[in-house]
Length: 622
Figure 1 (tube, rainbow, N blue to C red):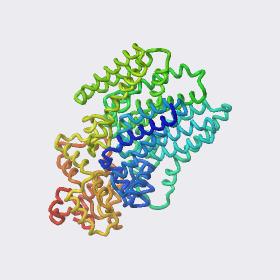
Figure 2: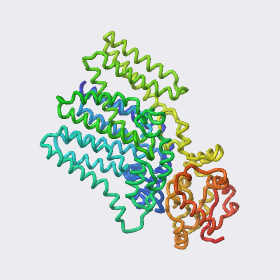
Figure 3: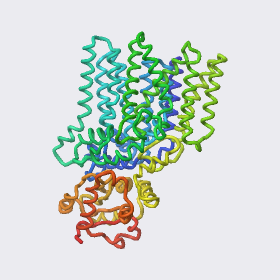
């Protein structure tokens, strides 16, 4: 393949990826993180600490790097959801380009182009790149680390840069970034020149750099001498508990480390299926990532059997992608805590690279039926995955089987070009259909909390809601979350009433960030959630509320109507979240507010105020 033809083909792949991920750019995004970016774009302290609110009450549950890049987009274009989405698209397209460069150095231009195309057509990759989750930047940073490892085979100094990028990945999504470290280290160890001791020394140096970069921000946050927001989703405000508890042990093995740990242990498995060796193929996860997974694993096994006489850079490639995939698949298959199907987006580059190499190898193999066999196996898996949504494009799974059969016939007739074209269509038709559906299907705000590609899973949406209160309450909670990008007339009236106060926090929202989202996404007011993401954080603890009020930090607190409705039915109905989580601080705060603050009559606020909830005036005792 000529250089010009390769560039044109790569440009087409990148263009298709940009079109699919950028289609309908002005779409809903995860409101929790979008609201944080809005706050970060207005307040330096919120920017540094990844604060959710401009008043400095609480941070989000992730480190800041992904939101720093999104805030830069907002700084250029102003705050619009499409400005954040544009940054995600740019990072996603950049990841496809970097994957192409890594695979090209390992397996040549044809394999690189195929890997880039397969990566772009991975359903879960499309889902995260059309949302505002940190996973998009995480994947890009890990691919940059992989590129540095391939360059380190020629100059070991590049290995230090690999450590830098993995460290930046930690500042994007914490321990998830370290999953690739065994693969990166193994690739350098098995293929780099020099003695074993020298290679281990460079790996050790890169590990130290990874650790230093990873822990730089947490150390600064810990040692910060002045006021700072409470670290969200923790019990003690410690960034270390966030990194190694809530985003660490709680994700891996379950338990209740950090706020929401019990909740994660209860519903985490439902979001991505129960842990086990077949989790990546189950109903919740399979359609997102599993289409080419068997092909990638078989390619890896075959390569391992033939690795003895391979060139160093070839061994490095198989070790890199094999280690990346095997370790990542094991972690995501058996993790027993909080788990979402979109976590598997981290596996997509390795699956695409290994599957592409396997297909090219099968095409060149002296065994005539190697490629048709790979196609038939992949087509059968596609049939199984598509059968789980029988009412969605019911003809597609039969078409894929027919194409696979046609590829076999073409191979028997010794028509290599026809075999290649038909085989490729059969392989990508299923995941490509999921990706296109993701691009053109309207997405609700509720779905952005747990993005998935292809036909949506109703069961997953009900799990996200986390409500076990019957159809009426559940429907009310769904409407509550889906209204994040709209500020109702009643909410505007409540905010206008509260703005007469001189308190540092214009309006506090009880019960978590979802109630604060509409205010932060649609105004520049100093609105803050009490209790962090789900309302259970001690941010602040109930014991601190009198001091906040007396110091002039807080006066007005809004209890959203959805929680008022749930409270009225508490004797018969209860939330699954509250059942699985220590909601003590939320209960204590609401109890203090009800006892020591005066409910403001809706008639004093405005004609629509009653629909917004109960506004407490804590500056006036009952």
